[in-house]
Image (tube, rainbow, N blue to C red; front, side):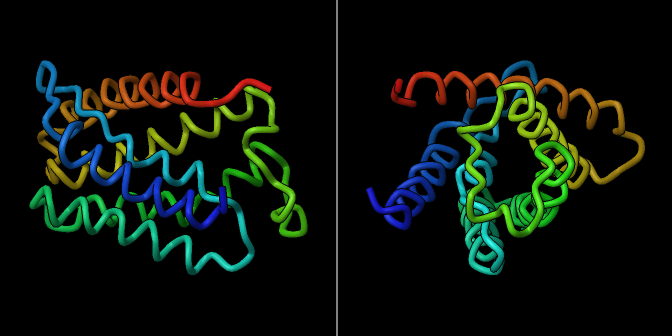
Length: 167
């Protein structure tokens, strides 16, 4: 399948999954899965980051539009999309000349796990900080971040395991 068609399908699938299914899950007032962050992990690494940042912004903006959340999803996913390169350099030791050859599927599980967990926790921390927007609720921000990140990561790795073909 063409990479552009695949990314377009993934964009639409994650948008509808988040808006119609996952936004309706609220377990124990602390667990809210935000699986749309996995779009960042599927997007290929390129030197020109403008199309990637624009598509992440649009994904967050559409989720904000359907969730009536005022731009917090757009800001959080755009921030994580922008700092993604730093963590690729940190965990995978890649430089700009390696970007065209970089594939997350070929990396070791430990590095991939650290990378995905770090970006998911950062995304959730920004998101829940903006949702609460008060230092009085900092404990709730940390609890929401922790439990929602665990649930989101569980869904991500389970979905990756189920939908990835074995080679």
